[in-house]
Each structure stands twice: as structure tokens, then as C-alpha cells.
Length: 252
Length: 194
Image 1 (tube, helix red, strand yellow):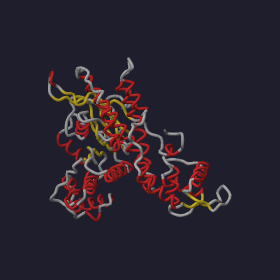
Image 2 (cartoon, each protein chain N blue to C red):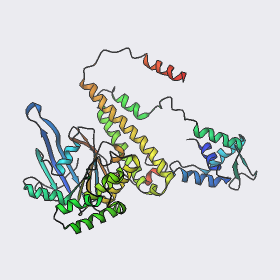
Image 3 (cartoon, rainbow over the protein chains, first blue to last red):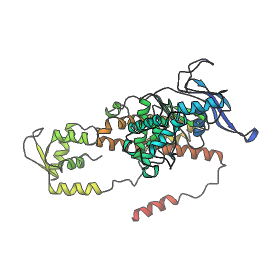
Image 4 (cartoon, rainbow over the protein chains, first blue to last red):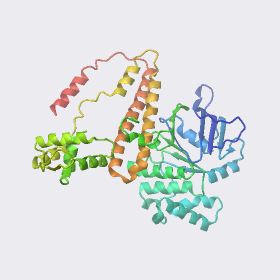
């Protein structure tokens, strides 16, 4: 379990902090506890994978971390701001400025070009069309997609579409990236590219939570948290360097 | 792993010295399987005895150069296409541990599964670091790391399945024993005919 390391009421230094988070659907004997007391702390530049079977509470955890749903009890901080009691407008602002989302099915708007898709969240933020467009092209360049900026989603391959979605999630220097099975719809080699790009974003300082049931995807993370029946049942300790694998008799 | 055939494969590109063969073997396999030079010379001697390679006939040691023979090429071509024997399941220690954990009184099999799962994922994290680092510019290493990741991934999937199956079995009342013994020998017979 993650130890928050601070007394109640303190502002956590982490980008995302969940303390004692419960989410219950329904009431009385029909109540279902999607999350049953989750503590999770994700620091800047850290990539955390949350791994568990379907129905373990992974997606609920992600929607609560992204402030799309409120927990039944417990506390959530995003970028040091506590979500409980925050006005609806302030939450929406936080979502747009701090949090980027990547979904399994990309969720690009078919009528917009790659650059327009990436620029859209910035335009919604009130940034001028020209500036938003420039930021979008820069974000696409950073992911090796400069040449595809004017292409429409249906002209892109699956791997390219997901890279556009990552650019859209990162544009505007967002601090927290939430990804739900980000490479679930891609073949292994393209999935690897997507995870490599997410990892690079984390190395530049982004905090990421990647939800997956796939151990190979999870193994890209700095820390893998295992979730079952809404509870964290274990997590990996930071692994030694990969060099140890290649020295006979060590690491095996 | 078949070192003799791997050496034949490297010699199929042209004649080489023993020391170079060792270096190339390790480079080609991403240095995942280290090979000592004594092993290389011993293997080359055996290949020469069997007429699969021939040497310049010089002294034993680094000065001796080897080339593949026609029967060596035939042997190599056969090996590449010959499927390895995968018919009988390997006696996997992890599988054994979980099967036995079910029987040991006072043991929580799910806890046993969980500790193995965490260890496997930590190991996979290390391989993935390697893939995202050195292996990006080393095709041999990338292929070898992929193989290892898929192998470990298969084990974690089996653990997940075992976990789910054991939970379901615990939740459902036990059924009367079925005469299922006959199915395994039938399967074996069916395979033997192929």
C-alpha cells in the first residue's frame, strides 16, 4: 500500500493522491463496492500501472482520479488541489488543464484533422485558434507525426491514431495522464511504440496512471499496482537495472 | 537451445574462427545466453568429427578456421524447419507449487499465486527496460527479449486463470466425481496417430 507520508489536511506533493477512497454503487444488501479503501500516490515523472481482472475496479479508479465521478468516501487530490467540495466549474477547469486522457478506442473526432483534434482542448480552454494550432503541430511533431497533421483519422493507421490521441492528451503541458488500456486495440509492435511514447512523456515529468489487464503493458510502468475486488492487493518494488538480467546467475 | 546448430548457422555465412563464432553467437542472441569459449571449441570438434564442418587442419585453438560442409548445410536446413519437441508438458516448478499449494493445509493458494505474480511482473519490468533501452538498436536482443516477455506473460496469464478458476470452484458446491480418467489416454492415442 502507498503510505501518503503526511498527516491529514496536508497538501500532498504528489500529482495524484487517493486516500481511503471508496466507491459504492447501490444501497443496502444490493450495494456493490467498486472500490474498497484505495490509497494511491503518483509522483511527477512516475508511471504507475494499475493491473487487475475485469470488474476489479480499474476503470472506476480512473474516473475518480480524473474527477469524472465523486468517491463515496475518501479524499482525492489532483495537482495538490483537493477535489471534494470543489465547485463544478473549478473541477472542469482542472480536468482540462491538468489531466489528459487516452482511451483504448482513441476517441478522435472523425470530422477534424489530426492537428484540429489535438488543438481542440486548447481552443476549449480559450487559447487563440492560432496558438492552439501551433501547440498542436508541435505536440504532433514531438510524437513523430508532423507529416500527418492534416490527415483525418480515417486516413491514419491505428498506431498513428493513438499517437494523435496521446498528443491531444499531453498538449498544453498537462501534469497527469490517465490511460485506459491505451494499446489494447493495437498489435504488439504498435502497442510498444505507444507505451514507449507514454514512458517518454513521464521522463519529461508527466505523472501517468495506465490501467490494463495486460502484464506486458503493465511492465512498462515504474510501479505496478495490483487491484482485485476494489482493493490494492500488492505492488511491485522498483526493479533493479536490466543489466542484472544479462549477468549469468543474477536476476534469475 | 541448440549450440551446434547455431554455430552451423553462423558458419553458413562463410568460414570463421572459433573466437569470432562465440562473439557472433552472443551478439546474435542479444547476449541472453552466454557461451564460454571452451564450449565453442568442444562443439566445433564434435561437428568436425561428424563431418558437418571442416577446418584448415591447423592447431587447436584460436588460429583454427572452420567452414560448413554440404552435409552440414543439409543438417542446418533440416534443423531450422524441424519443430522442436513440445508434445509433453515440461515439469514446470511454478505449476507444481500452485498445484501443491491447493493441498497443503493452512496455505492460502491465492496468496501463493499473488507472490509469484508480483515476482513475474517485476522480472517483466526488467526485460521491458532492456527492450526500451539497449534493444532498440539491437534486433537480436529485441527478438530474444520479446520471447522472454511472452514466456513470462504466458505464466502470469496462467496464474490469473488458476486464481479465477480456484475462486469459482470455492464458490460453487463440489459436484460428484465424474469418470474423466479416460479422456487423457484417448487424447494421447489421438496424438500418436498423427
